[in-house]
Image (cartoon, rainbow, N blue to C red; front, side, top):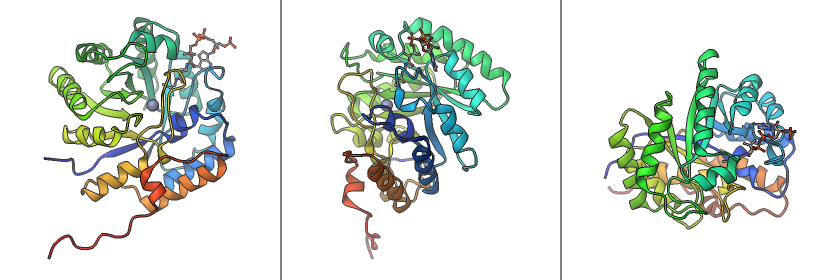
Length: 307
Ligand code: COA
Ligand code: ZN
């Protein structure tokens, strides 16, 4: 069994974690929350999404949120569903764009009201835009890559095909997303191997929801397959409002605990991360964060294993 020496944990709590809540955090609280996440050592943080405020009112203050975190030593990432979102994100000062497109036609329709081909055509325009603004990077997140809430199983060949479609536009970073937790470690292995075999030059990441309790097992398998970019949400919040049955992401606390206990460096201080989750829990009313590691409290320092 081999594991990477280190991984990049992409914190998606401020976007995925907040988009599905029945309450809206104030911009000041979002800025405070992102500051605490940054203080834990997280450097890649998806801070918001530039989407229709009618679709996701929880993140309607995207530009204000980005303005509020400008001084933090992080790479702010923004999710975008279309060219309009890309333009707004870039105008707000974001340089790392995360374009979402679903492998399944029905989820793409439900999520962004487009065919996959229309989304792809829009991605081509976004890549053009990115080429004109220094420093702008676009990665593609392929939603429903391990199963779709409307269509059920998603063929591995379809995942490979859509990875190819975005790669042909010049995308080099691809995140395979398990939007409603249908994945299992064997499926994760097969999908990653199939994609890597066909498109070995890409940087693959995973975005895993823990809907059926296999999120952390899937993350471990992804790392064993060589993945070093993993999304996670502090406290384990999250879920796509346009995917029936969606629940939280793998919790950043749980992922960091898994990694650090197994010798995989994350650069994240778990005790500081708890402060971010405690802040969020005290700010939200009636929400209990599902992270198992957060619920258990800070781990005691490990003693020597042997000798
Ligand atoms: N940011 C802000 N507003 C946007 C926008 C964006 N990226 N894209 C479109 N809009 C606005 C339009 O200006 C228009 O506003 P108006 O009604 O005041 O004139 C309205 O939204 C409808 O525009 P249209 O282009 O017809 O979009 P649509 O109704 O087909 O919706 C999306 C398409 C992509 C904008 C919408 O489905 C969406 O925002 N989805 C969000 C998906 C998401 O966040 N999912 C969770 C994460 S995976
Ligand atoms: Zn998600």
